[in-house]
Image (cartoon, rainbow, N blue to C red; front, side):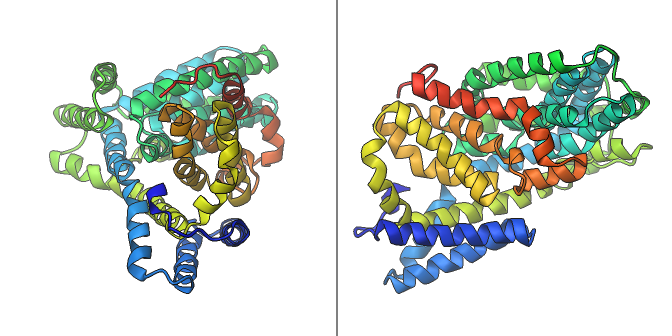
Length: 457
C-alpha cells in the first residue's frame, strides 16, 4: 500500500501516538468488553477519518485509501467463499468424516499425548478450523485424559498444538488463505514453503509429546462412541476419498487455488448427490447455508454441521474492515512515517525477517487479534522484502509462524479466551506444553538469522 502514502508525512511521534490510541481502543473492546473485532475496527476507521479531515485530506482521498486497502483482500474474499462451499461439500461427500474416522483409529494404542497431537492435526487439516477442532475433538480428548488420570495441561497443549497445525497448513483455513493472498502468493506455494518450519516443528513436538506420554492407552468410551457414531452416519464410503485425491492431483499439477477448490467442491457435490446423501436442491442450498443433518449424537452434529458461504461472512467482513483501516493508515501517512524511521535498518534478510516476526507477535500481544497481526504486518513489510531481494512467500510464511500460532498463547486474545473456555483450562497452564506454537516463531526467526530456507526474489 505504499502507493497510498501522502507527499508530506506526519511526525513519527504523532503517528505512534495515534496508532497506540487505536490499538488501546481495540484491545479494550476485544479483551475488556469482549465484543466482536468488527466494532473497534469500525471505530478505528471513524477515528482515522476524523484525523484525516483535521489534516485537510479530502474525503474522496480517504475513501480511496479505504477502497484500495479493501481491494488487496478481494482475492482472499473470493477464496473464503470457495472454502465455505468446499467444507460443506466435503461434509456431504463424507471426505471430512472419513478423515476424522481414520484419525480416531489412532487412539487405540498408547502414547496418548502424541496421539492427541496427531489426531487434532489431522482433523484440523480436514476442517481448516482450530476453533471447531478444539471445541469438538479437543473436548473429547480432554475428557479421555480426565478419565484416565492424565495431565490436563499437557493434553490441552497437544490439542492446541494440533489444532493450530491444521489451521496453519490446511488449504481450507482462513488464516492460511489470508496470509498468502495479502502478499500475493499462490496458496499452495505458500503451504509448500511453510513446510520448512512446520514439519520440523511437528516432528519435534510429536517426539516431545511421545516422551511425556504415559505408556498406557488413553482411549475412552467417549472417543470410541464418537467413532461408532461417525460410522453410523453412513457418510463414510470409499468414494469419500475421491475429492481429496482430486485436490491433491490439482495441487501437484500447480493449478491456481481458486480452480482447485472450485473443481474439488463440484466433484464432492456430485458424489454426494449420486449417493443420495441429500436431495439435489438441499445440496446446492448447502453451498450457502452449510451442511446440516440431524444425527443421533450431539458432538457428531457439532462436528459435521459446518461450512457454507454464510459461515464465512463473519471472516470476510472482518478482513474487509481491517484492510480498510490499513488503507487509512497508509493514505494518511501513519505507517509510512514510522517505517521511514527504521528503513535504514531493514535492508538485510536477517533484519527484515526478525522485524516482521516481532511485529506480528507484538500486534497479537497488544490487540489479541490474529487477523490484524497478519493483515497489518503483511501490508507494512512487502516493500522491505523486495528491497532485501526476498521472495514474498518468505513474508507469508513468517506471518503464519509469528502471527497465526501465537494468538492461542496470549491469555487475553480471541483464541486464548475461546480455548480456555472450551477446554476448561487456563492459557497459562497449557502454554508451556503448546510445543508446536512455541517452536514455529523460534524456527522462522532462526532461519531468518541464518538465511536458511529463505528464497531469493
